Image (tube, rainbow, N blue to C red; front, side, top):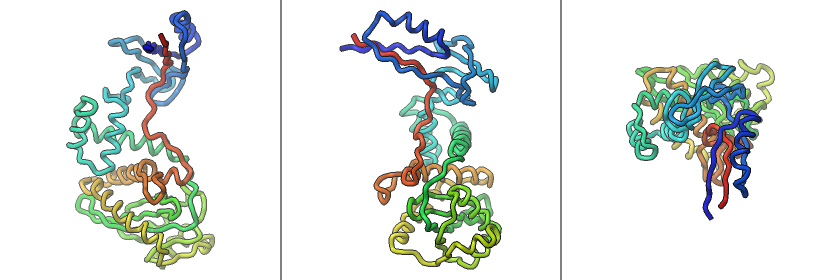
Length: 310
């Protein structure tokens, strides 16, 4: 049995009616009806803007931008899946040269390293905006890890706060001196994400974190018990986390500008929380364990797809 596929762009009832007139005598068929949205602002307020090389173009009345219905990343000719693949390879620590070669092999496109990096920055910023309202369901014991890295010619500390139950990375921040103010910012970021206080905070620098918590939370911070030692299962995770720190260092070590490093640090958090499956979590990601679902591939522009069986 052969399959004939008809693809028709749908915006309003008239488009749907016109499509129906073309295929109504070709039953049996299966119709999946969805809608076109602006690829920049996701608005429904769009109108047709002509056809170029057999590709429908659209005009968004809300953001006043044009876009094409060709499943490409906005502002480029690269497929969405290619850009998404480049993003994941970058945060895995794959060099830009190797990413370019992989994109050429899989998608027949060979953008420059600077183009890939700009797209990664843009997609990272969009992803950060997408997840900002996510609230992970985390446990009551959080762990603080510290590591060093050099950005340009300056040494920084990376402060990480991880939930021991879900392995969800609640907050990460650069610090030049690990002072109480930086610890306060780290804690406030984690509390804002989790919307709860931990019962136990594990860190070797107990007095400094006590001061930072008191600076940020006042008397409420006294409810948090700070301990320098962890249980066996947390120690096992710590071995895994040290490997993660080494992989992250590969991503960050070649960056010379602090702002770029800060964005990449946040981007790596997305990669770790939403895309990295862990054996100790029964091959789930931290976000799945924390009851958050996140689409692993950006949604292509939506169409009405009609299949006719003959």
